[in-house]
Every structure is written in structure tokens, then in C-alpha cells.
View 1: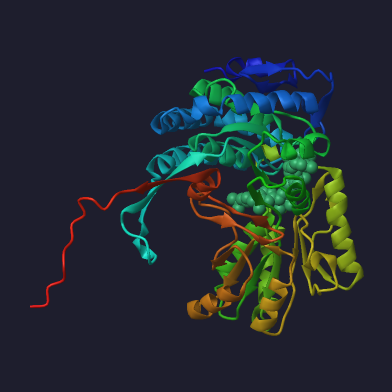
View 2: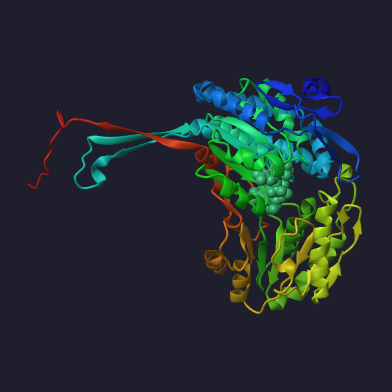
Length: 500
Ligand code: NAP
Ligand code: G3H
């Protein structure tokens, strides 16, 4: 099928519309936002800058259409998700190309992001249909009998607001949309501004797959202008958000008593012990720190090596980093542009601060346009900003320590608590260290990562609230409904214990 023709109704020329009541609309504000390719500054497209009145209309529409969708049998909702997955797969190359242009993601990773989202839709269809309820007898408490029985099943929350970040704009909106839909909710999606165009395609994909008009809706516009209004809106029943800790904390303040799922920033540390396999460790650290130029919440953002292997590890990592490809995302180079020049300035500021305070530059510290060369810093100390702040760029600090205890202390001193890594051959010790780390997930002998997507994914401290992952997200987007049967004791069988 011809991609342009199939998706033509979303836009007029190069200007994309927003989507509600099954229609593609232009904002009454008359205002649009121009999005440019972070690699070559070419215009990728324009999106609508919606206002609060339009937000009211979109949210009301979603609210009116909760019941028609939640009444649809779950096997039919699952079939819709599977069809949506087929459409994403069919157009993965076209969608991947748009994604590559709007956020500068290497083309191969951009296409993988679309296919991964299709996998999530398929797996969510499976997982959702298999989820059952619970029956509990009352007699666990003294004074109650088995004639009191609770029957628990899950019901949708209502309207779920799905807000995603720029770095996985399709996948991290899709991983909210699929569980929200299978649980029977209607949706208002607000994509990130830089990265809005690819997720806008969900409007056509889900309509073609069979989601009724008004159940899935999209609003575009800057989070700084409409974000608080959306989050605090009385008709929004739940917010699922991925983005920075700063935005997430503000969101939690304005959301009131709404249930929240927040996936926020990280500062994942790799603790490397003396007996670690150097080859496996080096590969994991380099790929973990530098894929998509470090613009991943789960990127390796600190390495804390033990003294006996620190020199060798720094040498190996630096060698490997010199071989990373740098340049055009269309050619799937590993290191490409950061999302904008402001972010490059921020990352450069972290590098400068570390070098001013005595860090040793092993490689990098070069900038061309929005590309920052992969940068390895040794002898980083805890008075340097890069020891604590999340660069969201290709910078890897080595913080040398004398002992495992010190490594744990530095790891836990972070405001973040997304994931941690331990590289060692001593699995017993790894488990003991894992018990001490204040993070959501600990990877033993592997890089930090969200997937596979049916694993629980969560952060502690400033890294988040609630648990993502297919089954967990469906649970977060639904609630138990409890019906209690109070039977009479009439007809109860009385059987006595035999002692003969
Ligand atoms: P961001 O600036 O916080 O933006 C995230 C989303 O929030 C965007 O859609 C943004 O819209 C919207 N937003 C802005 N202000 C808002 C408000 N007041 N209320 C509601 N929404 C608002 O984050 P980002 O720069 O896109 O993403 C990078 C950050 O996300 C990093 O810190 C990274 O670690 C984190 N992240 C975490 C995970 C995880 O799973 N833990 C995954 C990916 C990324 P606009 O684009 O219009 O401003
Ligand atoms: O950027 C945050 C994402 O949740 C990370 O996902 O580990 O699959 O790259 P990933």
C-alpha cells in the first residue's frame, strides 16, 4: 500500500493536524510549530499549537467515549491491537524514516523502535486477554466465614492521558496506548513537540485497526503551555508520563489525586569488580553509554571500577569508543546529533566543568553542529557535576574508588534510582551488592535496559513512580472492582474431624 496515500488525511502540505472525534483538525489558534531535523536543520513539518479550549473539547470527547470501548469484549479489543501491530509492521520503514528525520535517531534504531512497538501491541493483546480476577474467602479473619466471598475483577479508569518524551516518541507513547486500550480506557495522547509527527500516525493506524472514533485522540502543542492544564483537568482519570524528572515532579504536584505512572530520568552506574570479564564488560559499557548518543534514560551514565582493573577498563573502553561511527542518522551512524543546540550546550558545560576541576580527557570533547563527539572522562570526582547530573548525551565519566562499599555509597548517593549494573564472575557477591543498591532494577553482567517489554520497569527516588511493563502497565491503567457475596449458612455442609 502507498504510505503517502494511506496517511494523507493527517496533513495539508507539510502541516500536520491534530486528531479528535475521528477527524483531523486545524487549531483555531492559527498557530503552528515548525519542527526541524536536528542533524541538518531542514524542516520536517509543522504541527498544530492547540489551546486550552481545544483541550477541553478533546478531553470531553474522550470521556464520552469510554463506555462504548470498555463495553467492547476484550477479545475484540485485542484483535484491534493485533491489527494495529500489523499496520505498524507494514509501514515500519516509512515511519522509521520520519522518526529518523525528526529526532535524529539512527535509521536502523528508528525502524526497530516502530517494530518494537508493534511487538508491544501484540504482546499486550495476549497479556490483557489472559488477565483474570481473584476470589477470596472471608474466613482468614476470625469472625468471618466462607459464606462471605469477594469476587475481584478489573475495570478501566476512564480517560488516560499519555505523554511521551522526545527520545522514543513512538514507542513510549505506544507502550502507554496499548495497555490503556486493552484495559478499556479512552485516550488523550500528547506527544513530545520535537518528535510529534511519528506518533501522530497512531491516529490513522488505530482508526484503520478498528478503534471507534473518539476513543483515541491526540492533542499537540507545547507542554509548557498546555501541559499543566491537561494534567490537572478534572475529566482526566489517570496520567502515564515518560520524561524528565523535573517535568515529572511538577506533574505530580498539579495532578492532585489522579493515579500516576511516571518514568523519569536516570544516572545508571556500572560497578565493575576485579574479576569481571573485560571483553563483555567493555562491550556492554560502550553500547550502553553511547547508543543513540547517550539519549536514553537507561544509558550507562557512570562507571565505578575497582582499583585493580580500572586502568585496563579505561583503556579498553577508550579504544572501543574511538571506533564508534559518527555522522548522519540516515546512514545509521551510532553517534549523531543531540536533540537541539541547547542540549549540546548543557552537555558541553558538564564536560568543561569536569575538565576545569581536574578530570582526565581520554577521548572526545569536540563539537560540530549538534554532534558532540563521544567523550570519555577518567578520574572524575564527586565534586564534579558530571558525577551526578544526567547528561542525556555521549559523555561517560569513570569514578575510581578503593572498595565495593565506596562504589555502593556513590551509586546510592545519586538523586536517581533507575537501574544499576554489577560486572563480576562472583554471582554470590553480585547478589549481595544488588541488595544494597537503591534502584528499580539491577543488571548483572549486562547493560542497563528497559526491555524485554514484559519485564517490570521502574525507578526509585527521582526516577519514577509506579511500574511499567506490559502486565504492570495494564494493572496501572485499571483498578480492581470488588463484588462481595454474602451467602446464608443454609445448606452448609458440616463435617467433623474423625479421631478414631
Ligand atoms: P521532558 O522535557 O520532560 O518532556 C517530556 C514530555 O513532557 C514532552 O511531551 C513534553 O512536551 C511534556 N511536558 C513538558 N512540560 C509539561 C508539563 N508542564 N506538563 C505535562 N507535560 C509536559 O523530557 P524529554 O526531554 O522529552 O525527555 C528526556 C528525559 O526523559 C530524560 O530525563 C530521560 O531520562 C527521561 N526519560 C525517561 C524514561 C524512563 O522510562 N525512565 C524514558 C525516556 C526518557 P513538549 O515536548 O511539548 O515540551
Ligand atoms: O529512554 C528511556 C527508555 O525507556 C530506554 O529504553 O533501555 O530500551 O533504550 P531502552
